[in-house]
Structure formats: C-alpha cells, structure tokens
Length: 111
Image 1 (tube, rainbow, N blue to C red):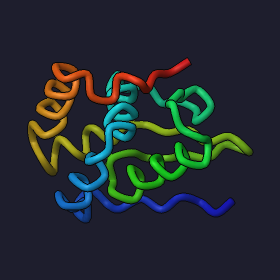
Image 2 (image 1 turned 45 degrees about the vertical axis):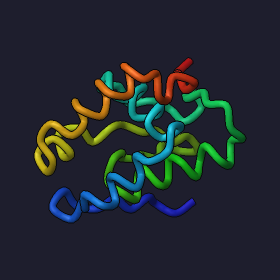
Image 3 (image 1 turned 120 degrees about the vertical axis):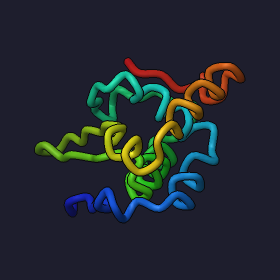
Image 4 (image 1 turned 45 degrees about the horizontal axis):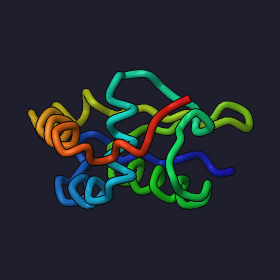
C-alpha cells in the first residue's frame, strides 16, 4: 500500500472541503472524528460496504479534512481540525452544529 498523500494546510481549498462534506456518510465520519481521537478504520461503522467506506475516507483525506496514518497493515484516521480551523475559522463548528441539529450523518459511529 502506498503512503497516503495529504495537502499542506495552505493548499487545502474551500471548494475541496465543501465537496468532501457534501455527503451524509462523510459528515458522519467527521462527526465521529470531531472528538479529536485518532481511530483505526476498523473502528468506524457506517451502513456502506468497506470499499465504499474506504472511498469516503479517501475523499476526506484528499480534500485535507482528515489525516491518514499507516502502521503495519492498519490504517488510522484523524480529523485535521487545527488545520481546518486555521484555514476556515468557524467552518467545522457550524457544520457540526447543523449536522447534529438535523441528525445528518447519525448513521455513522465508532466501535
């Protein structure tokens, strides 16, 4: 498996972030990761096939929303909150508040 590539903080584009956050499953993943804990991919539970979950995680990573770290055969993911807050102050708080109010992404959780 090749090492994941992440955009530098200054290269994170608003349009990329907004596109990545346009799906309820990806919003749910962000909601789960918003507690600041790094999670193994196997801990993330969503009502989609593993290959689809992998696709959603890749979209979030490529947009700069998450950071993925590989350790042996396991992959871990965390929200890049400090980078996103620096680039787009208040965006994550607004997203998370609205998502919780409307229960968007509530079908995603962690083991």
